[in-house]
Image (tube, rainbow, N blue to C red):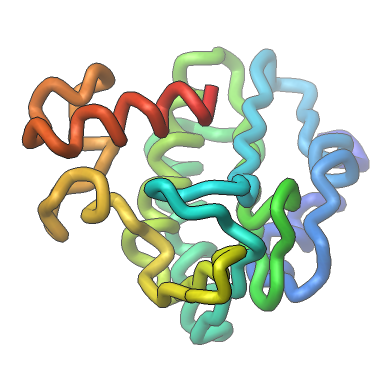
Length: 188
């Protein structure tokens, strides 16, 4: 195992929740492994709009010890399921500005399919299961509290998440299709 792979173990265990800006370049530099032919990095960044509102910034709160423990469990489950060489996830708390990273997930494994699948699995579980809440502050002075997941704003169903929706949004109610396809276009 390389020195960088050894040093990453501490990141996985102790720094799942951070009040400081996430160091994407530093985490990526430590996420290479001699057995891994694929490294996938997902960065969930704060965008300047949501559902037609202009976002000023987000503020995240978490039940920190529980959130860190749950993220560690998600990472361990993914490492076993996809035989990952590296699995890292960090989520910000506190104020996060537009353009800043709120959450990062990095997976490394011998082949790209497993790295992508595991990465998607990890971020979906973090957003939908871990006790992290966000408050969106809008430029008009209003704000909106919610969970870390706001899929219900698009799907119209608090029990249906975007990752369970077709990529075209064809299975959404008519008023939601335009917002869904617009949000996908903005994210690409």
